[in-house]
Image (cartoon, rainbow, N blue to C red):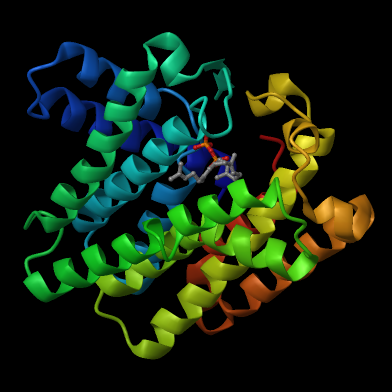
Length: 294
Ligand code: GRG
């Protein structure tokens, strides 16, 4: 299996499904629909949908069910990026190599596009296309709400905003990143086990894998922010430093941060041992997180 090709195939597949979904979404406003499409499809690695599809395949969930869940998680991710880029938050004008949604449209449209994507995610999960068993649908809705809300991504974002005025130590930084970036990645990995109604052991292993790659993803994001170039990452480099935010590099140095990411990736891969060759996709994904350049 060549991960790069599989990720590219997944991105096209999810983009096509999201485009059909968003073009068919019920809204009287073409501007809102255009902004939702702009912030969601055509760019972005679609890493979270890939994790949903691959964890689902590993544990035997139906592909069509997994695709619904993959679209839901990407809608939440796209909303978080659109809102994160707003002047009241990170105030960025470039994302994924193109102007951010509020620059392309306007601030009100960007806020509303994010709001609509967030609510659409839960509509998707509540559909019987996601699973015929209502208990499983409810479990997915609860898990995504917890991952995305005040106890998860939004809570982490709030801590991150306060980090600019307080000083964060390494542990506080890890906790904040675990919520802001980690929880949605963790959900994406656990989603396959929820869809497949797997054993608690499988769910724990996939959640632990997701937790470790989520933290490693943030460490590599800090490395890219410090060292990457805008052409590769599609966003302005060095912005964390400019904003006085603490990153892993401040505490560990560049080499220490690289070692931290390597250890996390080893931890992640150890969670996959019971699955043998079948887990090769997730194993390669963990390695990719370490070596990614965007
Ligand atoms: C505004 C509620 C709210 C939350 C924002 C996730 C987040 C919370 C902000 C994003 C800030 C950021 C750049 C965090 C670093 C890690 C991260 C989530 C990077 C973007 O994810 P990728 O690289 O993006 O998977 P693509 O564009 O490939 O989808």
